[in-house]
Amino acid sequence: MDEENSILDDYGSVKISEEVVAIIAGIAATDVSGVAGMSGGIVGGIAEILGRKNLSKGVKVEVGEKEAAIDLYIIVEFGARIPEVAWNIQEKVKIAVQTMTGLNVIEVNIHVQGVNFDKEIKKEAETK
Image 1: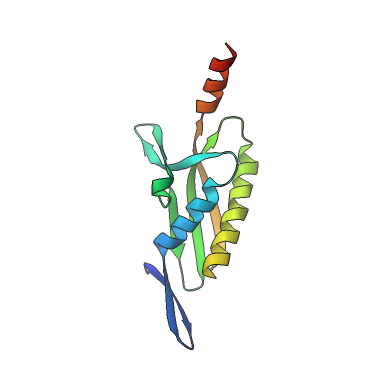
Image 2 (image 1 turned 90 degrees about the horizontal axis):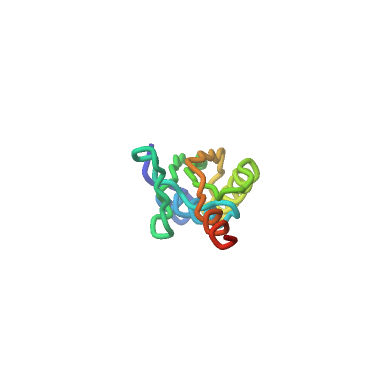
C-alpha cells in the first residue's frame, strides 16, 4: 500500500502520510480516560508503555485513497472498564482522524496489551 494518501482537487494534490494519521490516532487514544499508555508490543512477556514522545508507536495504520483502517495497541488502567474504554477510543479516534484528514475511517481495532497497576499500588501504599 502507498505510504502517503493523495487527495486530488482543482489545485493539485494533498498527500497525508500514514505517520501523520498514526500520530493523530495516538494523541486521540491517549486522551481517553482509562488509557495508561500505548504499547510498543510485547517483549519477553512484558508490555512496554510508551510516552508522549512516541505517539505513533502502538498504532498501525493502513491508508487507501479515501479510507483508513487503524489498529491501536494499548495499556489500560487497573479498574477501568475495558469495553467502555475501547468504545471511547474508537469514537474519539474516528472523529479526530476524519475531521483532521478527511479520510473515511472504516475500522478502529483496539488490542489491549496489558493493565497498568501503578496507581493501584500507590493507593494501597498510601493507606497503610
